[in-house]
Image (tube, rainbow, N blue to C red; front, side, top):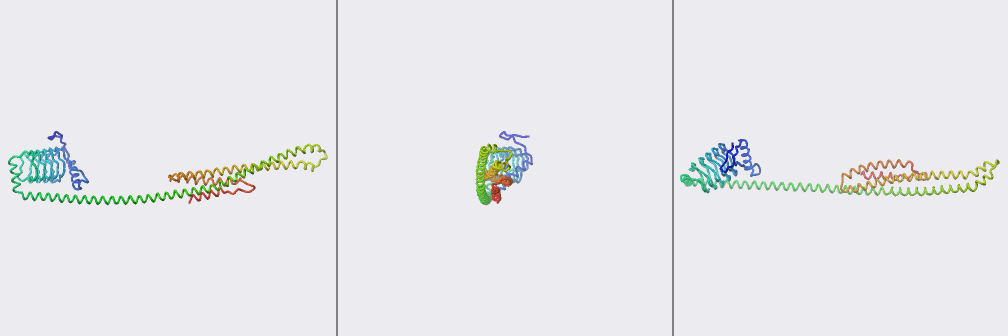
Length: 402
């Protein structure tokens, strides 16, 4: 069950395991100079009858706590904050209070043998039935405390009879505090040195990473420049077959026009010949007409028909060549466009450059195969066109694969 302290706030009952954990964390907090653990706080707890002897409770907070009938022998309460708590019937033999704040507490019937109150703020405390015959109270203020004449005499007598011992103990306390302060200074200096080393190590690591990043960026920049140069070279290589294809297309168009003109001219001559000689031949046609006369009249007509068929076949061949050459040029243009797309993307996107380069390689292979296949049917003046497109694309592929 919980009970209320003097302030009216309920005091919580705590288990031994929980209390042990609080004290262990507080001890770690003291030993590591507040770096680890946690400062102890035993406020508003019901610790009546608990055995807490031989503990270092420096800087601990004990507010509104019931410590009645508890064992607190040889505990260290230096700089502790103990207020509004019940320490009645507590055994504080050999306990030390240095610069502790002790206000509004109840020490009724408590045992204070060989207890030292040095530099403490002692306000509004009940010391009813307390024996001060062996209690050190150096430089402590007893403000509004209920002390009997006997207790005051005990304090004076002890001070007078043990002044030298008290001064020695006070000097020992001061020396101990000085040593503790020096130790804390050393720990602080060591911590600062360690922090300095960590900062230097982190700075060195950051510089190394920065240099590594710069090297990677320089390498990437060089790769981009190399890729850009290769692409520009590839586009330059494609300009040669494009010019060649255009010239071949123009030649085919001109030849088509020539053969067309010859066809029309032959048809005109044929019409003229038949118109001029048919009536004459028909009029002179008799049973005595010889084969030579028939041959002499029909040979020009046969020659004209043969020329017309030949010219039409040539026109058809030229048109087929134009279609094939346009098809090749279209593929060359697609490669050129692909290269320009890679060039644009290669500026900022390495992944896109890699993927498009792979696709481009496949397009090159297919284009080369198609170029070689189309070459089989393309004839110019009884002689095949030099496959400069295929050669240039192969050179381009070799260039990009470097």
